[in-house]
Length: 209
Image (tube, rainbow, N blue to C red; front, side):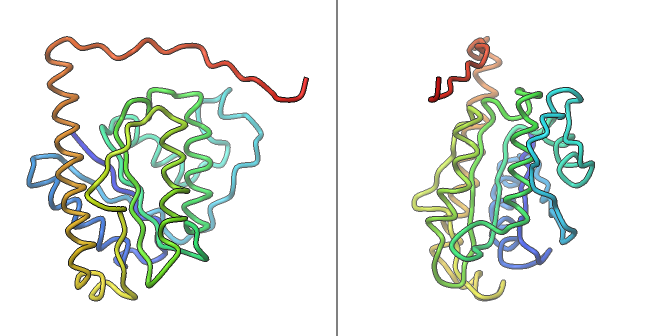
C-alpha cells in the first residue's frame, strides 16, 4: 500500500513539508509506503475548461499535473498539503488540483473510493478557510476523508517553529495512524470479497432550462 503526500508549498523543505514528513513517518511505522511529491515552483496553468482531457485521458498542459496523475493511478491514499496564502490555498496547488481533479472525470478510478486528507500550514490565521477549500475536491470525487483529533493544521513561520507546535505535530501523527488504519481496513475488506459499489453514469442537471 502506498500514500502520496503532495507538498503544495513553494519551499521544498519548508513548513508544509515538515508537517507532511511527520505524517509520512507514522505511515512508514505502520508499514505503509510513502512518497512526498513537491509540485515545485514552475508556473502551473489553471484549468481552461477545454474538455480535451475527456478525449485524450490527460490534461493538455503536459506538466507536473500529468506527472502526478500517473503516480496517482497506482496510489492507495492521498494527503494534500498547502501553506495559507491570503486565507486560501496557494495559487500553485489550487491550479494543480483544479486540473488534476477535473481531468479525473476521464479516469474515475484514479481517486474514487481512495481515502484522502488535507493539511494546512500557516504562521497565524486563514487555516480553516484553506482546510475547507481543499476538502471540497475529495467530496466531489467519492473519496473518504480521513480526519485527526482536530483540524489538520500546523502553525509556524519556519520549519523549526512548526516542530515546536506540539499539538499540530500530534495532529499530523494521529492523521497518519488513522490513514494507515483505513487503508488496512480496505485491504481486509478486499480479502473478504467486499466489492465496491457499482459506478453509476454521472448525470448533470443545469438549473436553467
